[in-house]
Structure formats: C-alpha cells, structure tokens
Length: 313
Ligand code: NAP
Picture 1 (cartoon, rainbow, N blue to C red):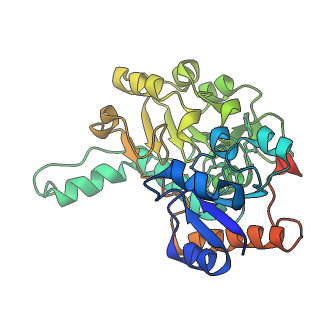
Picture 2 (cartoon, helix red, strand yellow; picture 1 turned 180 degrees about the vertical axis):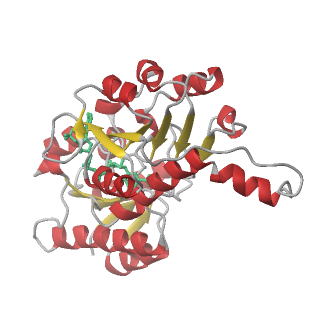
C-alpha cells in the first residue's frame, strides 16, 4: 500500500475510499505533527489537501519521497509550484466540476447586494413588514459588470450576468476571443463598471491586486464581489473604503484569514458574507472527491493525471 499524508479535513465520501486504498496518515488531525513526520515522513509518496490549505516547503522538505499532491479543489495557490517542478512532484486538482456552482454563488452575491435580499429577509423575519416600508433597492438590468479573471468560472459568471441583462467586461493578462469588452488595466475596468467580480486565482501574482486605487476607481456606487481568494483584495483597504462610503458594497465568499472574518464587516448592511461555499453542494463535492481520487489512482497506475495543473504540463 502507498503511504498518503492527509493535511486537511476531508468528507467521508473522500476519506473512506482513501482509507480503503492507501496507508493514510492524518497530519491535519495529529496532535504531534512533528512526531508523525519523524515516524512516517520518508514513507509518504502522496499528499491530499484542500483547495484552501497550504503545503509549505518546510513540510514538503520532510517528505523526501513525495511524488504526488492531489488537491481537493481547483485553486492550488497553497502549493509551491516551482518547488514541486524542481522535485518532479506532480500536482493534480479538480477544475470544471465545480464551475457552475461557484458561478451561481457569484450571481447570488451580485443579486443580493443589488436587490438587498439579505435586508429583505431580515426585515420579514424581524416582523418589520407591518410596521414600516422596506427602502427600494437597485436593479441589475442594464448595469455593467467587470470580471477579473475570465477563465472557466469567470465565463460561467458572464453567461449568468448576461442572462440578467447586464453588460459584461473583463480583465486578465491577455485579451480573449469572446463577446465581452476587454480592459487592459484593472483600474480602468473598475472605473467603468458597477460591479467588480473577482474570479482569478490566488497566490503571489495576484496578492492585493484589488488595492485602494482599484477600489477608489470602483467608487461610492460600485460594488465588489469575490468568489476567488481573499488574498486578491487588500482587505484593510476594502474595509476602510466601505467605512468611508467610497465603496458601495461587498459580497464576499472568501476572506484573507479564513475562517476568521474581520469584525468591522459583520455589522455592515451593505455587505453580504458567505463562509466559502462556492463549491459546497453535495453533487459538486462528490465529483471533486472522485477527481481527487482519480488523480491519485492515475499516478499510481503509471498514467497521466486526469487533471494536472497547467504549470506542470
Ligand atoms: P481558470 O479557468 O484558470 O481561470 C482563471 C482566470 O484568471 C484566467 O482566465 C486567467 O486569465 C486569469 N488570471 C490568471 N492570473 C491572472 C493575473 N495575474 N491577473 C489577472 N488575471 C489572471 O480558473 P477557474 O477554474 O475559473 O477558477 C478560478 C479561481 O476560483 C480558482 O483559482 C480558485 O481560487 C477560485 N475558486 C473559488 C471557489 C470558492 O469556493 N469560492 C471554488 C472554486 C474556485 P489570463 O490567463 O488571460 O490572465
């Protein structure tokens, strides 16, 4: 049996097949992590982690025979890709199967922010309907959305927003052949749109890319939606802009220091907060689990990974 290190809490539908197929070592749950590494580190050939979890170089250095990391998620910003390339470690992930569910969350955040469904729900549940009118909200129809990162999820978001009668633009490192307006700069796009929707990968290249200047360009009527990674937005600058009224609102599924959410955001009415639920449906998580297993199985069968990350192809 091949020895596998598990560094994240996993659902049963993924954990049980792993336990049945491999000699699994629970690094995430281990009280004595150093002791576990000392005991089994040299035997480990595979590692399973979550999309948001980290595989620090210091940990990987303790696993000299590691051959494959299988990420239970599409985002692999927690994996040191250059280091893995240098050691010949394969990295698998789970793109495509979660695209529609994540795009649905972006749509939900956009609609909720604009139509204030969170306040409408709170109003009815608080028994306020017979007592006072609910202020009018803002239509999304005819408004403009700019998508940062028009990839698999970004395109699925674009289709949904178009169906709502919104105009769509995008920013990425290059223009694509798509029926949407390309903005060569992020600030230029933020200046032109009503909604800025973040859908690019996390990691060093995009850290704090949505900074104070971009938020100022989005402006007092502008709203930001983030379903990608908390690291992409300068969270302190966003909070400052929301407090000052120079940013109109924020719909966030992801945060810089999950599961901890800055206290300032909790009390704001123009903010909608989700606990990283982009792919959190039974159907999608099962499909992600199957792909996580398939990547491992392919490696140990001597075949190409089903979904190898692009940088290692
Ligand atoms: P994808 O298909 O690889 O798309 C990423 C897009 O981002 C590409 O179009 C790319 O376009 C753009 N991009 C990459 N680097 C960039 C940079 N430095 N500056 C500007 N744009 C950049 O990935 P995906 O499947 O759509 O997933 C996107 C991200 O969503 C994942 O990486 C993950 O972090 C996040 N996610 C979140 C959840 C959740 O639960 N909330 C679930 C799944 C995924 P160019 O190459 O043209 O720049």
